[in-house]
View 1 (cartoon, rainbow, N blue to C red):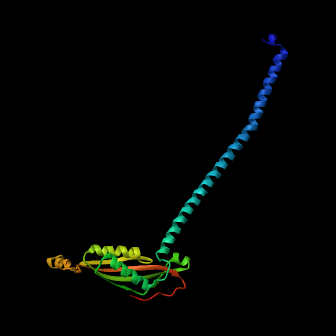
View 2 (cartoon, rainbow, N blue to C red):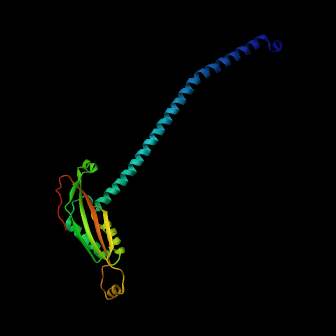
View 3 (tube, rainbow, N blue to C red):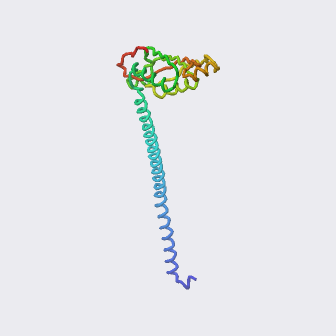
Length: 213
């Protein structure tokens, strides 16, 4: 084999082979740190992209929450939650609810408002004004009482919550009652004593809105 190729050619092949090996080794030694560095850079970049995506998700969530809070704020504002408790306006609402609910009578009394400590309201330089409302309702049927409560919750300014309801039946349906209804009368078969709390938020410099109906 050596005789066929010649010693010089064989030697040249060995030299070229050695150079190739050295070149490959050099390339490997050069590229290995570069590859490791690129991998580190890629990991760092992926971590940054992931962090940015998390920030974007957080911002989106915050934005959605702000939109929800803004919508809630506007709804409360439209309901009269951020304002003084005007007794005359409340009286008009009570009269309208009585007519719409179809109850026979509804005698209401609103006690003087009292300020209630509330940390969240204080942060906004507001105070919570709370008033107790008592109503005695007389109706033909208890369904009219429940309709009265539902309408009151929907139409009353501010926030109103039911604290107590005492419902009694004054009389059962009888022939006499049926004749009275047929003749156009409205006998009161049901009586309800209702206790509610009326709350609004007012600026800190607002005086106590006392008064009663």
